[in-house]
Every structure is written in structure tokens, then in C-alpha cells.
Image 1: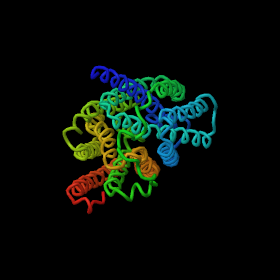
Image 2: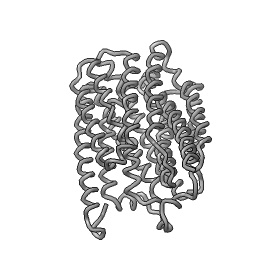
Image 3: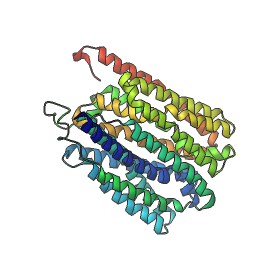
Image 4: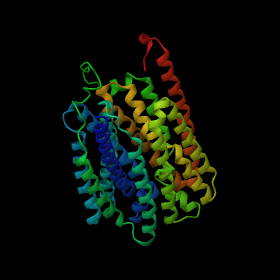
Length: 409
């Protein structure tokens, strides 16, 4: 029987690895080279920042709707919702690839597609936690690690390809990646049992609104604010990394190499996180992650050549590799079972909320003052994020030590 369970969990992990890898392959092509693609079609840095901000606004709207829909209709498999989103993305990316569009229409179609893409991670986090909550010993680390290597490898070879081919090839490649992602979304099995049946022995209370969910947990509030500052502090490396590379004297090949190192270094952290959260509290792992984001931002700010930039990319070892999974465990533990889909979506929404304000400002800063000023602003944001995360960890610890009738976390 244990051997049967082991085979079952490995199959789930393997399919989840395909699910995550195909998603991040498409995200790498579509979002990782956003500045390169949009610049090719005449977008200024300011307009690129505005496009990213519009993507984030659309992301928030979609995530609020999709997460509430999933919580209200637990009988509808999450994978089916993801598959429908992929079908919409395939249609939109096909339009970008095959039809010549004026800048304004391209901005709208690109933003709508990007908003849909950003909905998927929250759904996938909630999906895999359904297996965990059902009692299956599913390991999240190696599937996410494989997806990180797929992203990194794709980024490296895309950098090489863009030295030889026009950026217009990106949407054709993205279309192929989305078709693969749709296949894995359909192949993923449904979690055993009824939703949350194994996670709670009593019927859950009535569904709470997002406002109720937030007001019930000061820890969740503070963690989301810390995450917003952390995500805002990445606007230079996530959106304007091509500008950082060019200011250091590198080209598109160097850009691909930097992305390869940045994402590839996340894999060890992803592999270690399940082991770490079994031995340490998730909040402690998150503090280390936030400190690593600050270190990376400081190295970038003081770098004056490609050597320093690549060193900063290597500092990603303990950044998203730890944050991506430990945040899932952290949030899963601080909310009630019937709120977990929306809580996971709130975490992914923190990046969208940060981008709504940070990315347009980042574009203006690059256009007006240069990328070095943006690097300084990002380092300040990461400092604030770490301070807030330390306060969040202290608050959660104090709440656990307080008498039950005094807890407000």
C-alpha cells in the first residue's frame, strides 16, 4: 500500500512538474522578454511601464473574479478553470502573432493576455495544496525546480535566438508553449475527496469576502504589504533587465545569460524549501528570502559592469526559490480551509498591485533619470520589504504565544 501511494504521488508530482514547466515556458517567452518585444514595435520605456501596469490592473480584476468563483464552486475542478483561461490566451496570442496591430490595439491585446497569464500561478498553488490537504505526501520542491530550469534554459536560448531573429518570433513560440500548457492542464488529476473534506472535520462557515478575509488576519495584511514592496523592488530586474544589461555593456546574449543565471539559481532553493519548512517555520524561511532580495538589489546598485550584474543574478539562489513555495505554506497555515484559494490568489495579487504603481514609475524614471536611479529606488523598496517581513514574523510569533481569546492574527 505505501508503494502504491508513492507511485501515485510521484505521478501527481510529475504531472505538476509538466504543468508548472509549460506555464513558465510560456511566461518566459511572453513576459520575460516584454521590453524587447514591445520595443521592437516602437514602445517607449514609459509606454512599456504603462503596459505592465495595465496588465497588473487586469490581473487583479481577473484574480478577484476567478478566486471567488473557485471558492464558491468547489465542485468545478481548478484544472478546468485553468484550461478555459489557456484557451482564451491561445486566441489572444494567435492574434498578436498573425495579425498586424496598431500600437494602441497591441497594448490592449498584450495587456489582456498578460493579465490572464498572471492568474494561473494562484490557481496552481491552490490546486497542489488540495493534494497536500487531502493527506497525500506530495513534494512541491522538485516540480517547481524543474520549471525554474525550463525557464532559465529557455531564457538563455531565446537570448541567443534574438541576436539572429526579429523579436516578432516570440509570439509564435509563445503560442506553441501555451498549447503544451493546455495539454498538461487537462492531464492533471482531480484531488481525491471533496474539497476541504479532509482538511476540516466540521462544515466551514459561510463564505467570507476578501475584506473579511483580510480584516481577520493582521499577519496576512502585513505579509501582503511586505510582498508588495518586495515585488516593487524587482521592477528593475523583472521589467527593465535589458536596460541594466545594456548599461553594463551587454547585448541580448548577455541578457539571456543573466536570465538563465537568475532563474536557474532559484532551483536549489525550490528543492530545499519543502525540507526547510519541515524543520523551520515558514516565516523564518521567508525572512531569509527577503534578506536575499535586498542583497541582490544592493549588488545591482553598486555594480558597474557585467561581472557585478551576473553576481547579483547568482544571489537569486535564496530569493524566489524560497519565497515561491514558503509563501504557499505560510498562507495555507494562517487562513481557514475554505479561504485558501482566495488567500493564495491574494499573494499572487501582491505582485500585480505592486506593478500597477511601480512599473509606470519605473518606466518614467528610466526615461528621465536612467536605470541607475531605478536601481537605487529598488534597493530602498527591498529594505522596507525586509523590515515589514521581520515585523510580520514577530507578530505571528506573538499571536501564537498569546492566549486564544487575545489572538487577532
